[in-house]
Image (cartoon, rainbow, N blue to C red; front, side, top):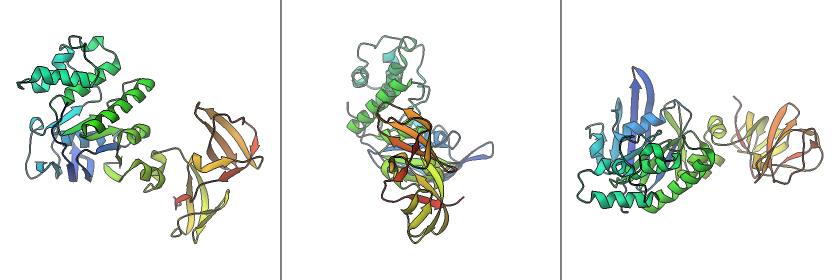
Length: 341
């Protein structure tokens, strides 16, 4: 299946409010043609509103949206059916009275090659043979694939997805999101994906834009976002961490783990952020194991050191148990720290 050439999306100074209650506060970002952007943030931060504005389902209070080289909101207004944008909703929004084939054909009813385009979309989503089935007779994973096929059948230049995996069980969610990531890469389509799940954002997004209270606080690759978050809130939101108190001076922070290398620009009281994989347990010591969580591929060990709690990622074969006395060591290159809150 071929798509319309991928188009970039540029959002500048976007503002929006519901009943005079501001939701977006001057949001700006750009998705390059063919790039996958994940909008990550807690409930109520404005990420779904931003997606609906790009789709044309609502008009912004201020700012502009450009898709490709066409301004679709701002100085002018282009209705949603002329934006060449596909959208997959959180609840999939399938028509219960239409068959799978007719659901997929909904956006291309005037196409002279409708039947071929429907067949292509169904084959791409592994739905061949289900053309005459009704949505209620399908599994959750199949319904989600029908929604994707319907969004892709008109061959859009941009695909918008609003938490499309949230209604799937855990195992199916993992399978389908990996499948969708591969499909988007294969098609080379520009996609903007809303989620509150950090794992999902890191898997699906080439870049992740973290939103908080109607603003984008950081937009970077998953690697940069995880290792170089803009602030403590972002660090905590995008991954597991421990926070301990420290005192920084001349590139060194003194804390319960000793003297550790840090950003030389920091000075004074700081909050030290430690990822579990930056710590190791090395023999007996002053710390006490409080809890061991076993995940199969690894284990998370919760350790109390004085009045501070640390999370340490260990291998799956760890023999530690509650009450063991251990020594915790920092094994990273440099600790992340922020001015004490």
